[in-house]
Image 1 (spheres, rainbow, N blue to C red):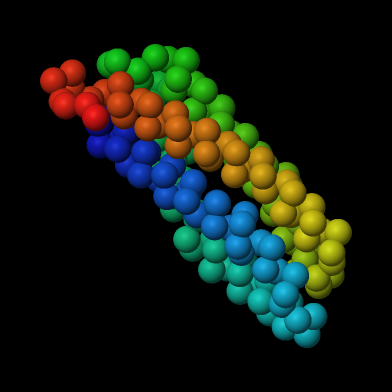
Image 2: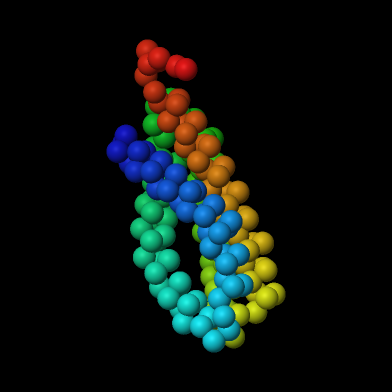
Length: 151
């Protein structure tokens, strides 16, 4: 079970770092891609981003489900269920808000309104993944042996 937990932590921490990069750097820069190049850029972005985010997102979802069914000793059921709820919020936001915005940007080219909605709605995932990172780090701390030195 510890390997599941550690892989789950790694996926969550990876995705948290990635979402902050996307929120602060990547999505805002969409506005700087020229109109003539935007369609090809957006299509490539969607294809390549899926290769990077889908494996850790699936690993995180699976880990959250497994941990909710069998929490590690020393971690409360409430904590793992909260983690699962945050994962479900992330997936719902992705499916209902971000993916449709990306689809609209592919279908109609760059649109300032769609872009603004994409950037604004992505804060849901950014906050949820940040909260998940805090949660998994707290769980990791709770699982540390008591005789380890603390700072």
